[in-house]
Amino acid sequence: MSTIWNKEKVAELFELPLTDLLFTAQTIHRQHFAPNEVQLATLLSIKTGQCPEDCSYCPQSAHYDTGLEKESLLDVAGVIEDAKLAKANGSTRFCMGAAWRSPPKKDFPKVIEMIKAVKDLGLETCVTLGMLDKDQAQQLHEAGLDYYNHNLDSSPEFYKKIITTRTYEDRLVTLENVRQAGIHVCCGGIIGMGETRQDRIEFLLQLANLSEAPESVPINRLMAIKGTPLENAEPLDNLEFIRMIAVARIMFPTSYVRLSAGRDTMSEEMHALCFMAGANSMFSGDTLLTAPNPETNKDNQLLNKLGMSITKTDTQHANQVAG
Ligand code: SAM
Ligand code: DTB
Ligand code: SF4
Image (cartoon, rainbow, N blue to C red):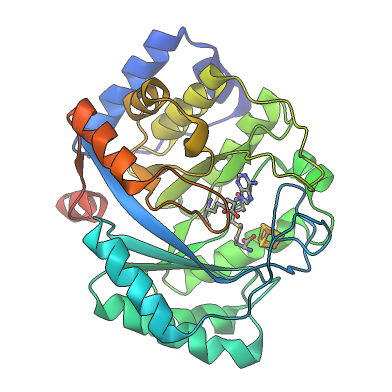
């Protein structure tokens, strides 16, 4: 039976003594996942920059001058090469992102080709292309897409302060279209944008209130990008980030909780505590979409030092099948 979450219950988790919170999160984590494994996913920006949306954190928005080179949609052959490399480096999922409000009709067939080609390599496929209608979601499902990433990012109230070109409701509609089409949902957010803990609680409750919990929950720590309105955002306290991971693990016991943007400035000890808090996935490869991520060698060394290994099969689905 699933827990019915409300603001008070989530706030109580955030307020636990840190070791109690970590212990609870790790206990739940071990009931559903191999404790010393981390899933790797690799990102590729298939269409970079000049996005019409005004997300205040994003280097790819056409509204801000972040010095980013605009690129048109990549060729399928190049995408396949990158996906092969990602697989060789241990990734089991390949996520292709495009800086679109929604996918343009003329580019959609090429994206479908990319999904099929990456899937043929034996990788799980994920795309993040902005808003989708029911028909687009259905076409992606028919192409064999495994996951669609579409983040709620923050609480409904805070969202209005960081994005004005679309509504929270728009996001919810896309997420439901994805779910109804039979695609797994990857949905998370960013913390460290100046939101309050209350916003973080309300954001997690929104995730919990989706028709089904997202199978992947990426937690990004704001990378303050020069030229964006958030370039001078106050850095988030490390312990609050760790608490956020732990609360996400407790609320979404069978989901992958992914350490996402912001790892490039996290210490080994910070990574270790995030894993202790229940993070069991991370982006691998030295670039996220456009921003830096730790090098593969450095990640491999870290996992060695921690005695951890890379997840080879999707234990989440194995557990669900096993009940
Ligand atoms: N355009 C698509 C969309 O918005 O759904 C997908 C790409 S967008 C870059 C995916 C997510 O990356 C955002 O929702 C946000 O959570 C995260 N992100 C973008 N810029 C970031 C930054 N500077 N720091 C941390 N996370 C960031
Ligand atoms: C997610 O939540 N984080 C990833 C992925 N989903 C698409 C993207 C992070 C982007 C960070 C900024 C950049 O690389 O441009
Ligand atoms: Fe565009 Fe996505 Fe960046 Fe927003 S987060 S500006 S929608 S690429």
